[in-house]
Amino acid sequence: MIRYCKWCVLPDSRPHLKLDAEGVCSACRRHNQKPSIDWTGRKIQFLKLCEEVRSRDRDYDCVIPVSGGKDSTWQVAMCLEQGLKPLAVTWRSPGRTAIGQRNLDNLISLGVDHIDYSINPDIERAFMLRTFEKAGSTAIPMHLAIFSIPLRIASAFNIPLVVYGENSASEYGGRDEDARSELLDSNWVQRYGVTQGTVAADWTDTELTARDLLAYSPPSSHTLESAGIKSVFLGHYFPWDPQTTRDAAIKSGFEIDSSGPRTGLFDYADIDDDFISLHHWMKWYKFGFTRTYDNLSLEIRNGRMTRDEAVETLRQRGDETPWEDLQMLSSFAGVSVEWLLSIAETFRSEEVWDRRPDGIWEIPGFLISEWQWS
Ligand SMILES: [Zn+2]
Image (tube, rainbow, N blue to C red; front, side, top):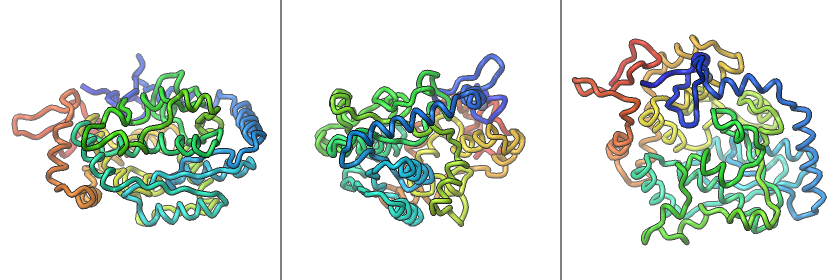
């Protein structure tokens, strides 16, 4: 039976999350250590790093992987503030939304050159369907692309630094040594990159060749090291909190979604891509929680909500199946919604779920009493 953190609403079925003897999760414990982090020291580290890359006098000082979201806007604004000349790079999602495009245009207008990297849609479609069918994730190609294309560009343009945003190992539970590190390397991607530990080469065959999947394959660690290219998390040097980065992004012209949240709790996160909700939706089958649980847990830790309020929010939300986005994926991928649902069903974890005699699935020991199982 899954257990829930006593402080937030995350279950111990969440990958990398551990509950301690008092029933408190690793992400909550780490959050409480944040005030004791020497943020001034870390900021100085970042300023030194900026000075060091500027002194190399390359065409560009850093690559910033951007989607057009609030974190991207924050990353760009922070790097410009330090006098860096960034090259912003985007993996162009086939599901980019209109607001995502406007926010991306705004981010470019802050004063950066930008590459919008599109992958052949036939390849993307075939790759998404393959990872969904075999691993229950439509987002493995996206994550491989996000952790590969910026490095390929850095290598091609001889750019010494790549500046990513938050370290998810720190924000959502992960090993201490990974949460404390500023470096994003191939080991980190393997563990926390949401690729289920795979690399592009694991997905190739005669239909999807290594050449087809080139964009999803980063340069080797050896190539990057000998070129002196390193990737860091900006969230290592400055405290990352979704509301802080949102406010910083809004000051730089970022637009929130006036129609409300697309997935999860926030109207300012996960709004740039129609397909991201499907990635989060699969967590319900595999681990028995959704993006909203992640978002609410951050709100609890940051003192903006009580645990009871979070539980009540989940109760009121009820079923979170993203029907509209399922329809959109079905059109893009040329498969039916029924087929998508039937594949999702094959990934329902029996460690989390129990089937009642009447055939309905439920989660024993679920966080919310009197939940409507359907
Ligand atoms: Zn917790």
